[in-house]
Image (tube, rainbow, N blue to C red):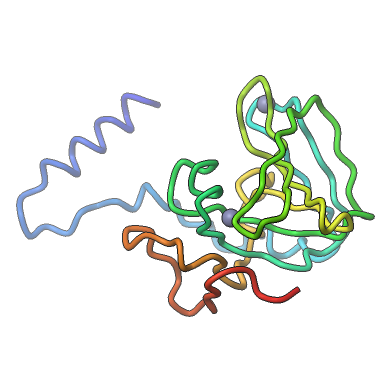
Length: 178
Ligand SMILES: [Zn+2]
Ligand SMILES: [Zn+2]
């Protein structure tokens, strides 16, 4: 399997100039008649966790806010230009696993607590001292990250030119009033 993939990459790279690159293997088409996760997402809990599976969560509520955040902390934590988050009412949240908690003062001046896996290092969720009623998860920690639908870009003032996000999204210099 792996060698087939490498063969295909090699083939793509060796195409003569002007030939359209055959990169369709990157996005396998969904066979007609097959249902996507979108068909059943309405009432399904949001589930996810870290890369090694030690931390898991299940959230039986709809997100109240979904955002890409370009603040410096989200840059450091993600290793790239922004973090992507879904924020839920805390009441609907069940989580398990030995998360390492790390408190820090965000660009907002408020304390936020990052929870990450001590074994695999994945950032999984965040809580906020000033907003104890909410629970925020990293979009990529979802079992189905396709359910993330960003609504806004926050701390756009810290964004880098190379971190190009959907221009249709409303941008806020900091956090919008919540
Ligand atoms: Zn883990
Ligand atoms: Zn941020």
